[in-house]
Amino acid sequence: MVEKRFAVLLCAEDSEYVKKKYGGYFGVFSKMLGEEGEKWDVYRVANGEFPTEDEIGGYNGFVITGSCSDAHADDHWICRLVELLKKLDAMKKKVLGICFGHQILGRALGGRTGRAGSGWDIGFRTVHLSSPSTIFSTLKLPGRLSIIECHRDEIVELPPKAEVIGWSEKTGIEMFRYGDHMMGIQGHPEYTTDILLHLIDRLLLKNLIIESFAKEVRAKVQEREADREAWRRLCVAFLKGNTGL
Picture 1 (spheres, rainbow, N blue to C red):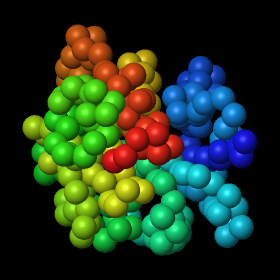
Picture 2: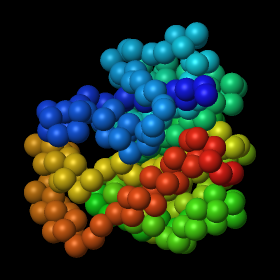
Picture 3: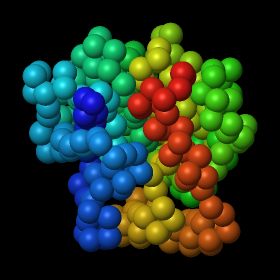
């Protein structure tokens, strides 16, 4: 049996908290998506570590993580990532983009990203699944799923030929698909509540949000839970072709 290989394109620095508790964000993703008989690697693209031409061909799929950077920025590593994603599209490689990864994937495919007109979205959000595709019915998913969000940017213009497959009252493009090989999710299916609470503290320390907003979000976080298992099943099914999108 041929071993399946996947790579996480890590677009953020691991915090000490996430490193100690989860082995970094690579540990978070590989634990959520990895299965027996697979090999998972990580490329710290935000630090300029990218797969080579030869390495790309050996992978069955890629996951692009969240980031503190803006997907509409022109940092050298971000521009390199855009070019890599265009190459993966041409090769029809499976690519799953999460948060920043969702946005940068949209940019690479010809869409446009920018600041969300409605400001920060932090906490739990209900995503309405809107695609007639078979994956939702095959997995017997409900029409709405709760997910953890933490972003102030969004895709403001969908790539040509892409299809919105999820939306919320806050964000019009919560999920999109492009062909059968690329999918973006604006929220964080991989996040746990404790990771979100840790991120709120970090955003507050960096003066990216104010204390009153942080207090309000913390209170609301205690009242809900994300549908993490449903999101895991959806991501695994897409990435590994266990069912059609």
